Image 1 (cartoon, rainbow, N blue to C red):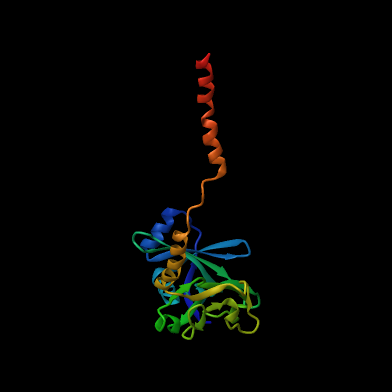
Image 2: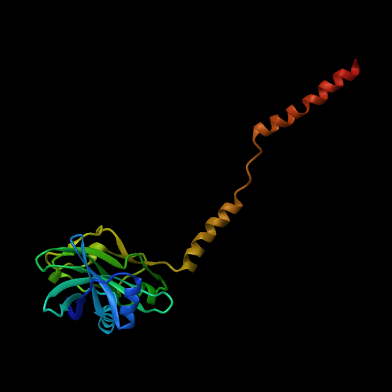
Amino acid sequence: MERISITAEKRKEHGKGVARSLRRDGKIPAVIYREGKSEPIKLLKKEITGLINRMSGEQVMVDLQFENGDKKLALLKDYQVDPVRGELLHTDFFEVLLTEKVKVTVHVTTLGEPIGVKRDGGILQHTLREVEIECLPDKMPERFEFDISKLEIGQSVHVSDLKLEEDVKMLNDPHDVIVTIIAPIAEEAATAAPEAAATAATPATAEPEVAKKGKKEEAAPEEKGKGKKEK
């Protein structure tokens, strides 16, 4: 896995006003988490923005270099972006040790165009784009890749099809579907048409006997009235 170094500074200030001030100075507020503890830091906006743009959904280990010479190895866990301006607001890191296993989410990338799509007009359906694994930090893959060019309609790729390096444990269910090739919509509609026609051709059922009895009972009051007139 790739490791990237960026400059970090410890900070004591908190609050929205402080965060805005940092961003005006070209810095981004951040937090490092470790075993239930958190440490506030600040990063150079140019460096952290470049790191995020470089990741593209892949896992990257980050060497945080502090001014006093301290170093911390971490994973970028989350970041917040202004929904209107698109500017980076805040980042969260998780400190790791090379001797301790961690649970991380890794992106799954597909390669090639399925023959079931290219030749037969099928539809590629993505069900799972990330999987969770457990391993030592230096065993962590940047991403999983799988060639789907030979997949035909009705075929799928499951979690169990991914190749794992030694000492890497998959936490997802091995039967989970990652991608599948489904039949074209037009073909499904053509299959459903005969069934609909058969349903329409089914004759209506006869009126239940209970309804007939109800009609006879409705005439009873008239007969009773006739009996009174004869008197």
